[in-house]
Image (tube, rainbow, N blue to C red; front, side, top):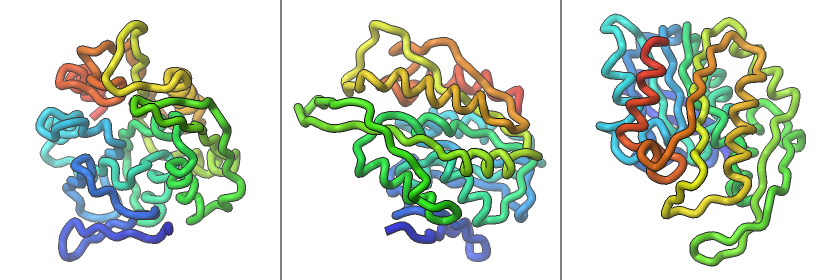
Length: 249
């Protein structure tokens, strides 16, 4: 069941999220130099902000590089399914007014998922939008590495949400870290569906079409030296991402 979820930064400040439950894995990270609602920088990432280890992570590199006087709030994967709608709800619920946002939303939004997993994303509409307006499209029949047969789906954002997101971010300088495509011929232990690569392009294209004050950071194709599973990044991959981001901090 979707509901308001609370996370305390300290005894005085609590952050609100909207979803079924807070993520309990290692990649849920909150860090802040947070004087109030108005902040210099909001960093909002999915699981790829942390990958395997925090010490080698993209977000650790970013936090370590921030100017001493900069106020910031960093959120990494607060919900299992962390997407643009998660960011939208978070900003509204907490009344956050950032001068700049750096985010990698757009990947989890469109990658192929089981219907039960996509429902966790769709539920997040309920706070501000009618759930019935969301669309789920069938992508493919898939057999995973455990020989389990699955139907995979992709959500499509309704026009009303896109327009509301654009309105929310219209006065904010938003830096969007697009997802690197994968070089052909590289294979990982975890099998990926045929529709996976095209879904990455869908997410990147969605970010490019947003009518907001934005800077898009695109990357050349990554190989298995830069990503260890086709999604999350190695230490070398995180460094490559960080180098492209640090001039925007």
